[in-house]
Length: 345
Ligand code: SF4
Image (cartoon, rainbow, N blue to C red; front, side):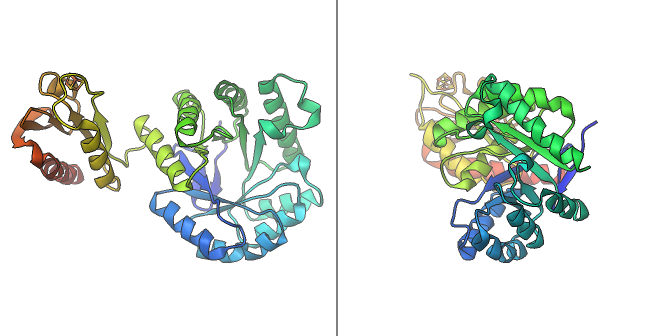
């Protein structure tokens, strides 16, 4: 039986898999923090983590918490007194590795218990303790996590979330798989995953593999870029796996010698235009009529390109043939029609 904990109003450990990200603006700059939180909220992020490196950052935390539409997690390293200040500032969760804490850990745990705040133990392969460094990578991640869990359990604290991240896809998957038997909710993701392209690939492989096995309760797609991209990628992963139905999915053919229209540009424009349409519609952009219609039978709305005119179809049936200059307008018309249908179902 898995524990469920709550980060603000967001459950971690139940059926809903939440999406989170982390601010990358200065932790002392309240306005910049709130601006980034607002962008994350508009992208439908569920939880936001904020680094709290020192007292100066802790002193502005309450201004951020009070004005944030999303629950805030304080990311603390080593310091019990910073954790206490973060809890007093009203954060909804703490990321803290209890075994590394200097100061009064019991006070932190008692305050978290009293306020029903979860604590995430976050193990990264790059910061494994000396005592576990000789172990194989996966064993080291798991042993380190268990050590920190044990410390919290000894203080009778059980609102625990665990993460064990590596920059290796296979080590990340193996470590989470081992820990999944514990019953604590898991925050899954790859650490130091890299820039947009590499990061998306690594995160998709690891997070996808885990979610397909039913492992993972909250996800962060770590990327070296704007955190809004992390949220978009995470939501797409959940939608593509059928775990959420709050986005359109644009499918498009790989193009070949038969291609009659600019598939990539049309697909990108459709994706951009309907990004905020919270409907699980599948929209197909196919380069020719020879294979296009058959290849996109499962789509709600689609286009199959022709030399001068293209065929638009809805629910797998041809509904209109339009000059290629009118493809986008016609797709828009049918997508909105289908979205309305979807609303009335
Ligand atoms: S749908 Fe047509 S253009 Fe696209 S890859 Fe298939 S055959 Fe080629």
